[in-house]
Image (cartoon, rainbow, N blue to C red):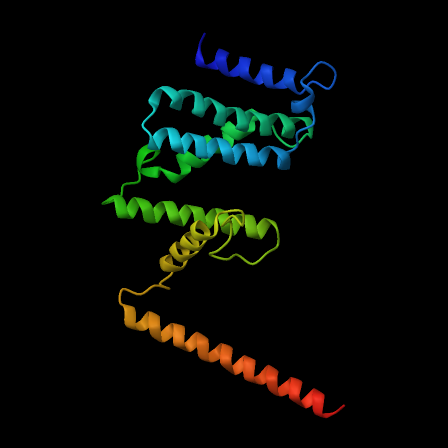
Length: 202
């Protein structure tokens, strides 16, 4: 079988699993939200296979992860939102647009310039999304709330560093911390004063 034939077979299997009359009861009742924990588990299992260099298991883990994508696509198809082909079209367009040095005549002098272009394209995407939703664009847009705290803080720090909110030495960082602490203390004292004034009027 060709790649296309294998992929179509997988899509057919997923559709049959979700069939409201002849499908699997477990698969039938799943939603976008209920599948998420299974997706996260599959990602960790994939990462573990790579970490352990268990390449015989890696093939199966990649298949499990692909199945998650197909699962979401089938649910979306049933809801009339989009189909698997739309996912592929969006991904292909994004990869071509973000790699003009490969798929167009643009050239960059080094890897750092390539990365800068990649980030610029992502920022354009965030701006377009914010505009379409009538919202103000922020450099912190699209950082998933569901990320583990350390991962989320790291991504926030990277985004801020891209716009110059970063230091190469310790002293300015410490000074900034003291500045923020002073601002907190000012607000705390102001709150205490307000509460004292309220109490004295009773």
